[in-house]
Length: 72
Image (cartoon, rainbow, N blue to C red; front, top):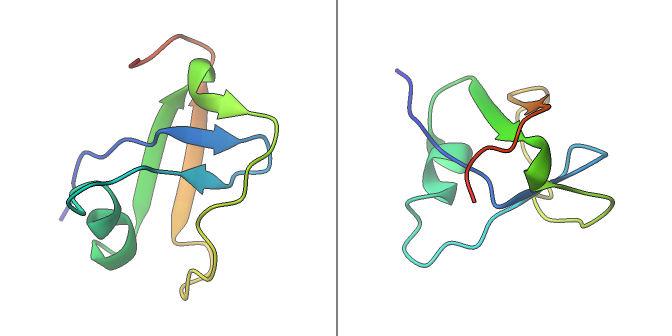
């Protein structure tokens, strides 16, 4: 099973920030498949900001930063 999801911001330390009004963005991250891969453009990165805290399955979420402007 796979799903396409996005992230609003990702920190240089790999922390994720999402604003989600109806859980369509965070539900796949929290309750989705065994592996989640987020591909985000460099424009989505920020120096620091703490958000997802307490993921139960260590190493389940991976973040790939692409040196391109992706999304908006």
